[in-house]
Image (cartoon, rainbow, N blue to C red; front, side, top):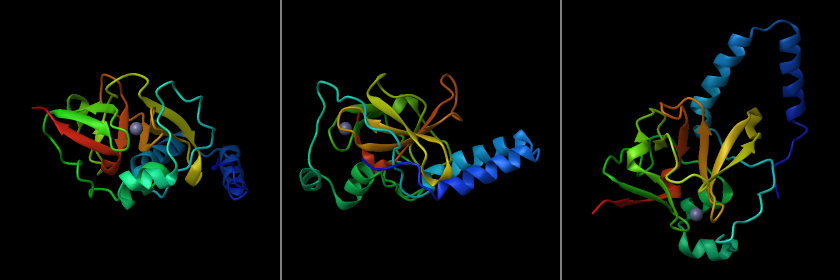
Length: 187
Ligand SMILES: [Zn+2]
C-alpha cells in the first residue's frame, strides 16, 4: 500500500494552523479551497491514503503484467498508477452522443451520457454515477489537499475525483479521465 502522511506535509499543516491562529479569514480559505478543487484534476498523480475496502464478490483483480496486456501505456498509468491526463486532451471530453461510459479496464458501466455535462474543467464531468455503489470513493490527501478519489468498484481502476461543485440535483462533479472510460454509443 502506498500513500501515507509524509513528513513533508507537516510544515504545510503547521503553517495552516498558524494562519488560522492569526485570524486568517475562513472565506479566503474557502475560496482557495474551491480554486484548488477546480484545478485539482490537473495536479499530478493521486495516491489514496487509506487501504481499499474488502473486495466485492465480483471483483476483478489482475497483476500489473496482466493489466499491461489489455491497457495502453497511458491507460495503465492512469487506471493503475493513479495518473491524470492533461486537461482538454481526453478523447471523451467533448463527447456529446447518447450512450454509456464503461470502465476502460473491466467494462463495468460507470456513467451515462444523461448525467454528463460541460464543467469547463477540461475532463469529462458527470453529476452522478450510473449505479450507486459501482463508483467507489477514497479519501486522498496527496498534494497538500483533501480530495475524494473515485475508482471503479469492480476492478479498483482509478477514475478521477469527485468534487462538491457540480450542478443539481446532486451538486457533485465527478471529474473523470477519458482514458479511464470506454464510450459505448447508443444504437
Ligand atoms: Zn473497472
